[in-house]
Image (cartoon, rainbow, N blue to C red; front, side, top):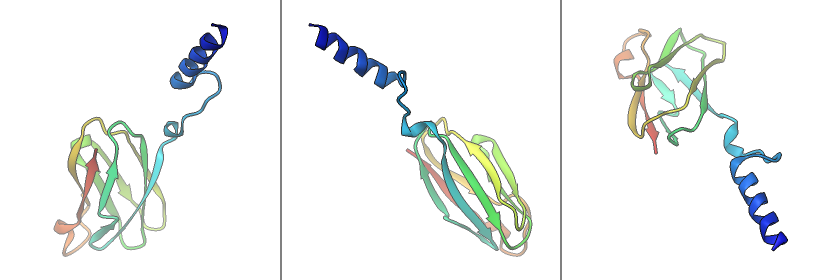
Length: 117
């Protein structure tokens, strides 16, 4: 009977993350996004609902923006710098991300899709 209790206690501690176990999902996933006139690469990004992610945004072109209006998050994208934007989506679906800083002719088509499963 003692072995069964030990097993159940160990299982409960592991499942709740207590007892030194570190779950892989605890650290945010880094997603690199590059922007150039007039595209984002990748232009479709898939994440899980509740998954913490950090977008690392770069451009070598001109000053741009990265906006995910459905989650009320945005960042400037500054040429030659890595800009970081955190997100943990709280709803599932397909959402548009877009450049919200005019970057030239073709700017209005610069967007992508965030898929939250």
